[in-house]
Length: 280
Ligand code: RIB
Image 1 (spheres, rainbow, N blue to C red):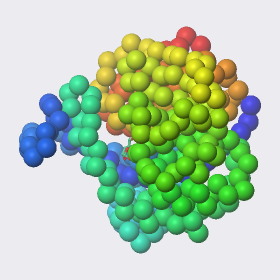
Image 2: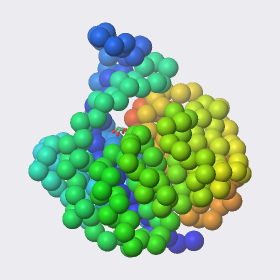
Image 3: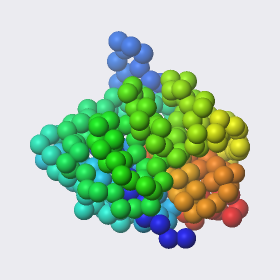
Image 4: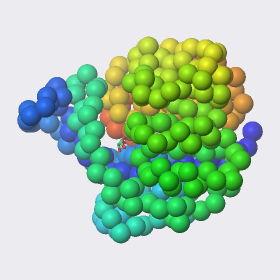
């Protein structure tokens, strides 16, 4: 099955500190190890999809600064098409991420170029499948979707108000439990996937539960980016015409494998790793 996949979304450089326990409000924790890795929900999805075998392009913006090259390095190395990445007059998106020993995280994003991204920067969509998320302006996504007739997957993260038009157009919505509680998705006419952390995920169609899946047993190092990898894998699997049950199991496995290594893109599994853990 041949199809093209476009990711419309964010690119960040992730500045990661690993600490024993996440700081509480007003607390300072010291002695953590520091790593800078490429991230951003859009770029993470693009790398994950490419590693799973999809021909992938990303439409996004980076800044006019030295961070841009670092943020783009994995996308370039993995062979994601970058012709539609714009350079805008802002700093490249920066995510400040704290990861605890049990793999939980806190993330604060300085959006920079992602927030400066404008409808005029986005070329006409020509691929069969689009994945987007909410780290770029809502009006950019709405404008890109005008007249687009392909399959639309929306990872509705981070939670944002005023996105009903985008959600209504989505063929597939992907959210975690917390996000699901903040949208009204019960009567969504398409597919809605809800991730449940270590408990796995559920898939509903027209409001009815049609599939559940549990992740394989793994040792968690860092949960950052697991949702992005899950979204990429579910979309890729559905585009390949896998059954909804198989697609959900595949996405759970890919999300789980992503938590076994530090970072997001660097932790994203290959197709061979995903197939192997599922015994396919
Ligand atoms: O979903 C994980 C991502 O969220 C990180 O890579 C960070 O850049 C933030 O955008």
